[in-house]
Image 1 (cartoon, rainbow, N blue to C red):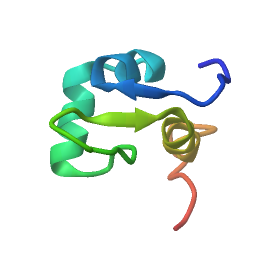
Image 2 (image 1 turned 45 degrees about the horizontal axis):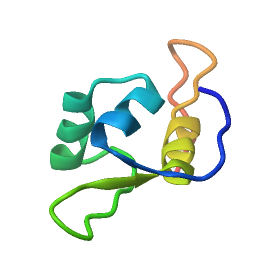
Image 3 (image 1 turned 45 degrees about the vertical axis):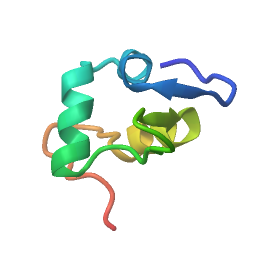
Image 4 (image 1 turned 180 degrees about the horizontal axis):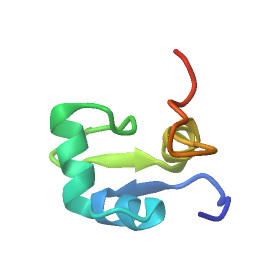
Length: 70
């Protein structure tokens, strides 16, 4: 994922930005654990800053790494 200037993306674009499927991103909205999003109308909008924050919070150095506390 390349650092990009701040943008707002729809679900399909946000999924592509993160390198995951749109259905995975939709499931994360339903069950929790996904990036923050906005829903000003019927459409879901993601802010690239929130996507970057969510992605970075899941950084690991090994398979046994449990991630950051908090």
